[in-house]
Image 1 (tube, rainbow, N blue to C red):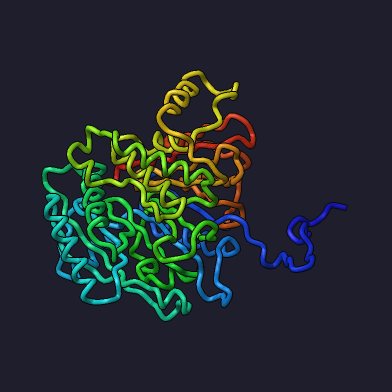
Image 2: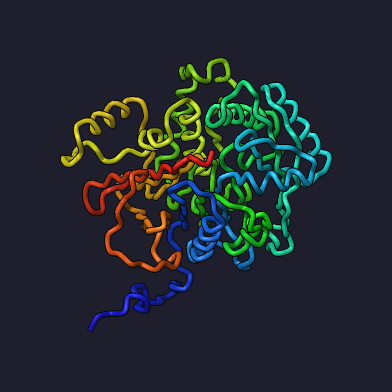
Length: 430
């Protein structure tokens, strides 16, 4: 007779061990409309995935404060236009502005000083802060630990300079502005600052993410990309700042080589050069926040490579290469690619499935040993749904083998080998 794998307990209770308290890696997920059509469904499905992954999230002994939960979304132009108009702020057209999410200190004087400093730095970098919006929150749902350390959460609207093209070039200016501000102010954490994406996150239980931020409950908030993360702290203590997503990635494991990776990045700073960043390079150093978690330091490095002009998928391949050396199935061109860049960048290794997005594409990559697999489906109505495990979202399956559309590229050599995936959405709505 076959065992019921849903009810059979492979690890029975023994001594002080109780399988009820078993945890593994963090939980991750993504929902993407491949045609690039923003919808409420993407936001709702992504929130449902992270709420389903409750068993992948850590919590305190009282069970009322979580290790952290977050969601990365595209900036919803219709939503933010309407919210800005309530404050008499005119944003302009799509991607004519950037939105910053800030964790300010609760002290009013320090908060005002930090906001004024950001406005001055933004002006010096050739842009303008159009105004501030205090993000609506519901702090009474939080546990005592989260409530006592809760920051004051605000959004800034930054106007794009007419001389700066939309997209990556504008985001690069915002990146430089953020780095200068971060080095000038120690009391504020910049959750995200971009013209394409925004991050809502905090020190929550998984079901508190949408409850804490009414923005995420608003039917007007639509997106074509969403990535989510429920945190189980392994290397660092929980905090509002260290909750995922970071600004480009979420992951559900550990970077075991993080000390060496970070040290080598710091060592490169004396000789590093970039034609695109030119005279702004000194404003960006140090590239890595040495006090950040392993995922935050990986995110710092990936962000720097992208802002230096390396396409996001290529930057991920440099940091997390496949085991190419003895792979006979790999093409010569691809093996030469990895061999060449191995002389410049060491692999960031460890058991982790990593999702990445810049607001235009969403991708995923496994660690080189495939120790943290993820599952994905492509639906016949043009949605990509991915999670660190099956069962995160209910689907009606009417086929056995998905057919990948032209906008979806998949490289997978053999079963159980690392997978690298890019989903480039159609940008016709811009």
